[in-house]
Length: 220
Image 1 (cartoon, rainbow, N blue to C red):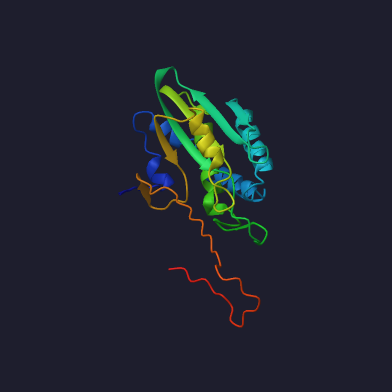
Image 2 (tube, rainbow, N blue to C red):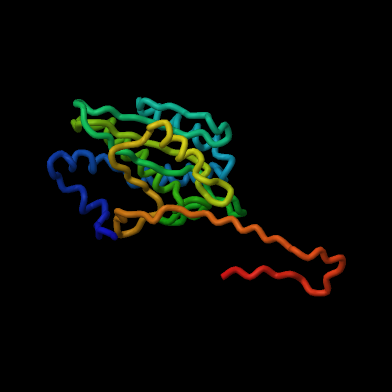
C-alpha cells in the first residue's frame, strides 16, 4: 500500500500551520554535503562503530539528548530524543548505519548526484533525519510528545540479523509510530513486508571416497 507524495522542496516551502517555518530551515546544499560526509565513512555490517559515534556527536552538537548503546560494541546504537513542550505520543525516526560489505569506488559528488556505497541504502536518509532534527531544534515550533531517533547497525543480511533493532525493542525503546527512511522515491510506503532469512543445510548421506561428478545444489 502506498501514498503518492510530492517531496519537491520548493513546493513544501509554502507556510501551513507552522510547517512553513520548519521547511524553510531545510538547506539542500547542507543536506547534500552531509550525505557525502556520511558515505565517506565506511560502515560495513559488523563494523559500524566509527560511523555511529560520528552520528551521535553530530546530534550532540545540535544540543540534542543522545545516548550510545554499546551492547554490541562494534555496532553501537544511537538513541536521541527531542522533547516537546507538553506530554504526548512519541514519533520515532529509525534507520540503519551499516552498508553491504563489498568493494566500491571512492565516494564522489557529480552535480546533484552522490555516488558511493550506502548513499541510497541508507545514509542519505540518515542525513535527512539529522536535518529534520536540526529543523526542530533551531525553530520555535511547539509540539506535544517526543521525537525519538534510533540509528543502529547489524541490518544487512546475512552478516547481520537485526540484533540491535530487536534489542532496542526488548528494551522498550520505540515510538507510538515510526518513520523508517529506508530507500525512498516519489511515494511513501505505509506498510512493510518485514525480513525473512533462510538458512539451508545440505547433508550428503552416502560417504563417497571418490566422486566423478560434482554435486551442484539447485535452489528453486
